[in-house]
Image (cartoon, rainbow, N blue to C red):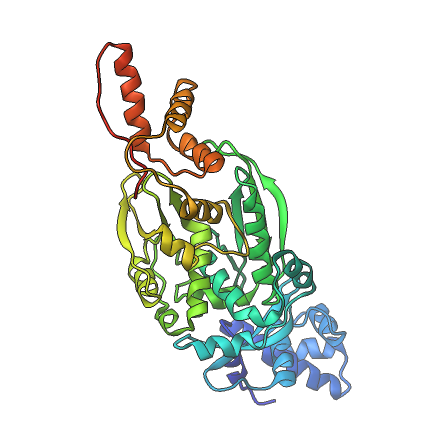
Length: 417
């Protein structure tokens, strides 16, 4: 058989050295000699290969990986120009089991993403989870993929699993149990993976760490070349890239439909966003992709302001509560604790001037009980639907302390924006 290794170029991210290619030649030579009625021992003498290796090959066992890839090629043929074949699943031993899809080597336009997504079929667990979140059809696949992209450049980890011939990846998500809604966030992310044909399951909670007093909900996906393709082709990262430090190269996100951009931002915000009750705004940590994320917000008509978090040295983009509510910035399907805070702040009453007597008394009583800062702001917002600020709390606290010392302190409280 004439040696032609061009078929190797039809498979995504596959690498073979000369030793692997020699196995290709040896295998077909052994098969040809067998057709000539040679026994394993004679074939071993001619090919200079161990007899037990020849015997296994002849019985269809321990077949070289490059041969298995060739067998797949004979069944599925050549991919379209500019694409390569990729298997969603594989065995624990690393053998590809399909389904096979054609993926563009690099994403430059939304149509290329659509082409890949249209080939993917949801797994059975998607039918279970979609009822929980009110997802009516798998036709929302593109938007769920957009949300997953946002999660991937946020808090999730994407560890690489390197095998001899290729690299695959899995998705790992750990979310604090301090907020019950984080369990729904993890389940929704699993839904987004399931619609792409990827398995993702909830695992045993990770224990609390030195800096975190709560355990972590944990989800882990299967390892798949598809995730590697998303990491490299869609996000434009290198094999050793890390979303925490390396910018993604995904300007194609600026050309996608409006709904896709919003769902992408929601995935990022549900992962790396927060709501500041005192400043009464929402924000998303965007480092190191601030320029790109800023352009996406701008394309949606949302004004942002850059803010450096001095404690961490990370940049974030701040948006008004009105914009966070109307966009919406956080997913209405997940309804995370951040989403709930935005709704409460948007609908909250704001008092200009002195607190009314009942509110002043309630704030003072809580301060005496040792409840101040964010906890007190949350309590007033939850119980009374009133948004107050840290400076108002601190002013009353200082006034109370001054009275104890016999000092009169004048000031006006305000909850207005």
